Length: 171
Image 1 (tube, helix red, strand yellow):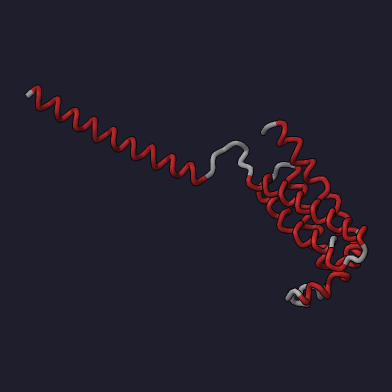
Image 2 (tube, one colour; image 1 turned 135 degrees about the vertical axis):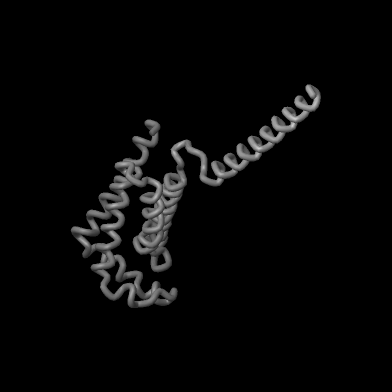
């Protein structure tokens, strides 16, 4: 693994581990933020049953975030961990930065900044989730194998034909 990956993955994961542990140990502030956007979520068609036990939802989300962050930081299934964090980050960013409820120019600016930060993190997580550590994709490997097999068949056929031509000349 390159030095940049060895440094970048733990750095990217650190905020997720910290916020996940915080949600597990101190869910009240997270629950409060969720409660503020709950009416908007219901209007958007999110079933109320999902938010029936908000405290449990926050803790589960925090546990997933902390675990996936630790996995990314320690290079354990880093691609899956990064994609999991990306999937969890989208709703968390929307809950933490409900720009549609903001009143006042400064508050809207703050919410927009939070949304852009969340979007940036999702972008970084997608890059980490799609990073193959310099190895080619499975699609490329399969196509390359097919190409090698085709070339090998052609070489065998040409060798067989050359052998037959040589036998015919020799008699």
